[in-house]
Length: 250
Figure 1 (tube, rainbow, N blue to C red):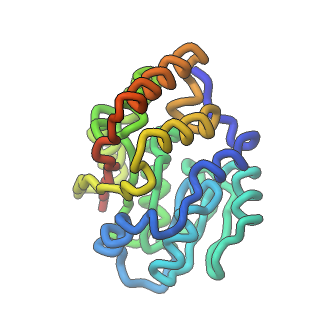
Figure 2 (figure 1 turned 120 degrees about the vertical axis):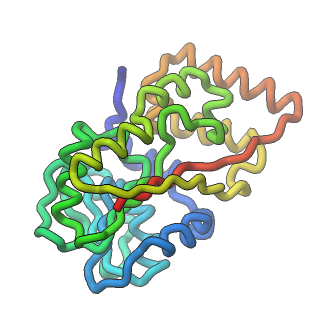
């Protein structure tokens, strides 16, 4: 199956994913519940072009270490501009060039399905995080895609997403590294962004080769999804509830 070449698609990725910070507000209160008070920085693992790095820094006035392996993603993020106190580190999740107990918490947004070894990543996080520090994983886990509008219209993309890790698999991998507690929340996201299906269609076209569920499907499967969306738009259908999971590990 094809994977996204983020070095080639970084600008397209940023154009499709970057939204006004207000759009991310449903996540602010959830993160605030679990973010410990500390002088240590927050780790944004798999930071991409810095969309969440920016939000985390602005919301909580904290230093953020943005770990991202793709040079092009880092370049776009730097060009757009990171807040003062945030900086990029070129690294993979399985080999973090950070000292022991140097971070107050870790944030991973739509990252776990990209990991080459979840257990090694978990061990690295256990090493670089302070004792009792939380790992907050924002993801659409396998078997829990009922509130992803895209997958209602692109069954081939939904099938790709079903190959991603389950909650149980991630919890087990982190348990091996010493994370013993977890909680699972569903966060309802900003519905204004997806207030009509035409917006969903436009986003799918823009992200055809950049979204990790759309990129692997065939052109015929993508065309089938567009046709299904077009029928829904013509029939006056409205988007359903939109929500993404937050898995907390301590």
